[in-house]
Amino acid sequence: MNLPLFPTQEIGSLQKPSWRVKGLSGKANEQDIKELKEWYAKLKLHDRISDTVDVINQIKNEKNKAELFELKKKLREESQIFALKFLEQAGLDIIYDGEQTRVEMYEDPITDINGFGFKGLVRSFDVMKYRKAACIAEPLFKVPYHLDEFLFLKDKTKHELKVPITGAYTLAEWSYNEFYGKRDLKNLDIFSLFGSEKLDRGEMALALAKNVIRPNIKALVDKGAKWVQIDEPAATTYPDEVGLVVETFNESVKGLNVKASIHMCFSDYKVFFPAILEMKNCYQYAWEFANADTNKLGIDSKTRTGYKVLELFKEYDVPGIIGLGVLNVHTDSIEPAELVRDRILYASKVLGNEKIYVNPDCGLRTRKLDIAFSKLKSMAEGAELAREVCK
Image 1 (cartoon, helix red, strand yellow):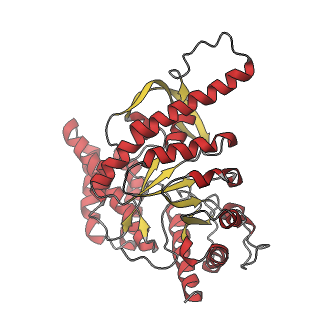
Image 2 (cartoon, rainbow, N blue to C red):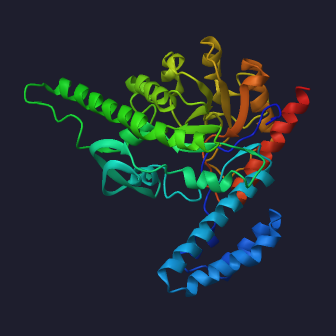
Image 3 (cartoon, rainbow, N blue to C red):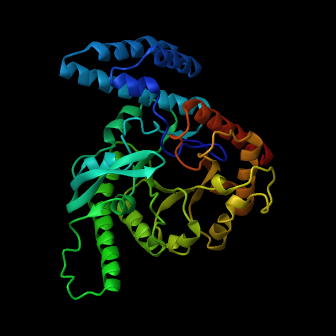
């Protein structure tokens, strides 16, 4: 697929529309249906409105469990198409479905992995919570848990699809450990115990990479997936474990013919150097930058304070391309296209035009859909402005 200079891409999740969330529980009201119709008109999906509203109304009244299951499946699939067209109409080149069929980036995959048992709810950020599990046996592949959503999407767009998948290190770091480390600890002092904990986490993470993540990616590749994005938000929780993050990435994609990128949000990226040089076959590093940047126009280093780490990519001559975060996902402010343009032009000045892809800092699920759409549209417009400068 031919992509333009500075291709634009999604980076993960979108907020689920109210008609989808409330529709699945049979509680969609007139306002939800109104929003559906407005969005479908905006996204040029007029011919899907009637059928989607019918499904929502049928869910309210259906009593047969088997029929209700199929109706809910249809509504989830409809939200996939909605998100796909949402990203297309915003002007993005590389897209997916905003993770519309997933519960949460940790809980959703853990449910489909052998060797874990859920323990209870913990807070992730703000008021968001997820069910945390313990590793109680060796992690083993159960089912290819992202395959159905990919197979549904693969013929629904002419755009390139990039499948996000939560990485092995994050799954391990966010889990309790009740299996690894059943070694004799009686003779270890307190410092050895800390070292043992890290060793145990390493064993769990590598088992997840080899036994679970790699088979999941292989299942996708075997059915036509060309690109996967491994999400590692926990990557720099322990700076002395970045080597383990690299090792789990390498193990996850070992022997697979796929473009594999890594997305790490809100991290101290400096600690990843020089360990990043040991990362094999990483096509793209999709990182967060705009969150720490100024909102002033300009392409000088004093203005583009959020992009200083790019100098390390240059200094270490890191292979692979950069997924450049140009949208702050923690604010409703819409970045002007000219600001997006200057962020891109600064990065291209440091690393060269061909090294830069363009994306939000992270997923936009914390932003309302109208805000997310405006941000993404401005991002696409900013990328076009940068292309004009570089002609």
